[in-house]
Length: 194
Length: 127
Image (cartoon, rainbow over all chains, first blue to last red; front, side):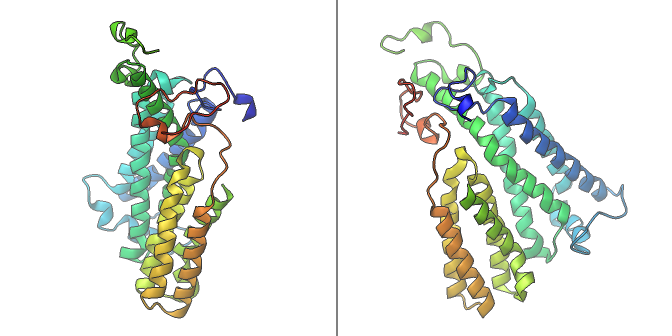
């Protein structure tokens, strides 16, 4: 990472750029894999496949994917998960390599999609053995994917929040900074502020 | 990083432990609840910007150790829980070397001043 020090695209005080494509593409790839796996489970729940792939836990996947928890909401839990991964991938892909500053609201939305998806996935992983005494292999894989996305997504959220915070500290509108707008002229000329 | 990955491995082990070691009841539920939580926070804490969530696992590991001793679990569940809990808490206390600067971290979001460092090469201090 030494080579990235003081790179022009990096946020102030950062040794690397969290919005660089090298940082974001792995997260987007995870989201795509999660979308495919969750989509497969959702199609099974919709009845498009008579059986579901389960290499380790016998009847586990069938029990979990047909449980009352999976039917709590108007759409099945796997379908909701698939939509979540889609939202992660799309919100992770929108914007250029300085989007922590040019599109902070999109970065924050990306974080809002990634965080709760991971949280709900882990909750479902806990419920599998505790409520149903069963494990579902692909469900575990999708949960792992959603958890792996959290850490690398949050550094970009931090960079965006710092960008908004620094705009406010300079006397500029934090909301204009949040939505990626140039600071308005009269607010940028507060005496004593740089 | 290594400490977080080892902690995540212990969390995943806890998910399998009741089946592998053959224990059930409240001890099984304890492992099945705390295992995914420990693995999750360890995997999030493995990343620079979210390293701080390792403190959750200090608590989770401590709870696992204390509960395993206090609630009268059968011997192998208690031994497994105490060892795993103490190791998780200990590994989660390992301070991390900051390899890359992240502009003053989350602490920079609080307070009123501009967090970007004015002196090149000097990290901004969290406030």
